[in-house]
Image 1 (tube, helix red, strand yellow):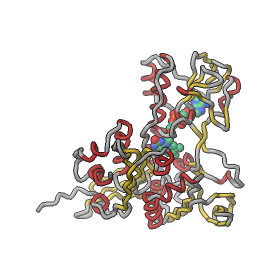
Image 2: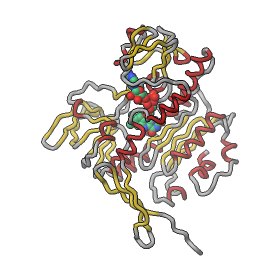
Image 3: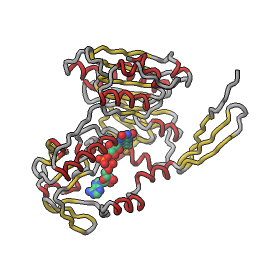
Image 4: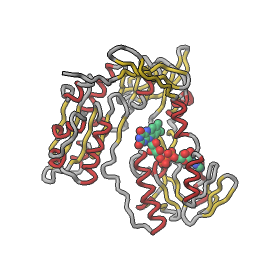
Length: 403
Ligand SMILES: Cc1cc2nc3c(=O)[nH]c(=O)nc-3n(C[C@H](O)[C@H](O)[C@H](O)COP(=O)(O)OP(=O)(O)OC[C@H]3O[C@@H](n4cnc5c(N)ncnc54)[C@H](O)[C@@H]3O)c2cc1C
């Protein structure tokens, strides 16, 4: 028997502007390849203003580019960089900004953007949602505290589900202290960094942290747009849009992505919105938006992925379905990468055999979820998936045993 060993260990050594990745040959322990990954350099490739190359591409398509913070000047007018532009239609795609919380000491919070820009190596991080933990651990964090603040029963339902329970167990093992139903009420500067006051069922708790990263939600970035000048109505921080993402009070206005907050706030959704809305602005409203089967992934270790209906939503929709939910930590997919958290919950409609929802945690689920997304969007049945030959051993080869 011959083994080919091509596995390398990746060491992350923190560096002021990123981290080193060193490949170590497992057999003889020699470094076989080295690379310095500049975290900030990589980040800048997608956070810096639109690159010149992109502008050249736009120019070839007869699209003019203007620089500056745009705001409305009239119902069909926008001022940007000192110029006033007129449009038959105007598309709002300004994205979202962190929501203001209105709690004492809010100014001590660091946003995900600030965090991505920081080079600090604080020991204790406090998070309000599980996100970017991977980056956190790369920065040398020895303990993470995550205070989930579920807004309602829907979240609590998800938290009770098997994938979520497995995630909590796994995070606990790796030093992440997850608190659910815990509302942060105030943040104070203390001699030891930050003191965080939180309440759980009216019981007050205190946490200490060097840095508190806030990822508790984002709202459309509409305030600087002077929308009232264009006669556009905003309700509770959101645009009032009718079908086709067209303004109710001003039909010359359309919106997409996080600014429209019509579909889930995800990158593939803004691409979808943009294609549909562009077609409708050019040819009249005829294309409809379709958010069926939008997958989402929390890139934790291991990742958590979800698509389609939750068990609660399926019941609320009066659907008849069968469900499989298991802790699959002893399956080969998890064992071969020594991952202790692997689990799933899959809902299949009785009668039609259609996949209604899939909720996964474990190795490779960030890829496997796309196959469930394809099934939901294109109406593939559980039988279709069971009779497909997936490469073995890959995460997808477990699908037949999940449905
Ligand atoms: C920390 C973080 C992690 C995320 N991770 C994921 C992920 O893993 N997968 C995923 O699918 N989605 C992820 N998202 C969500 C995703 O980034 C957004 O849903 C998506 O970028 C929305 O696209 P958009 O075009 O609507 O807005 P944006 O991408 O925010 O683009 C809006 C642009 O408009 C500019 N702008 C704002 N106001 C004005 C103005 N007045 N004049 C001119 N320009 C203006 C902004 O500067 C910005 O460049 C993440 C979001 C955050 C914050």
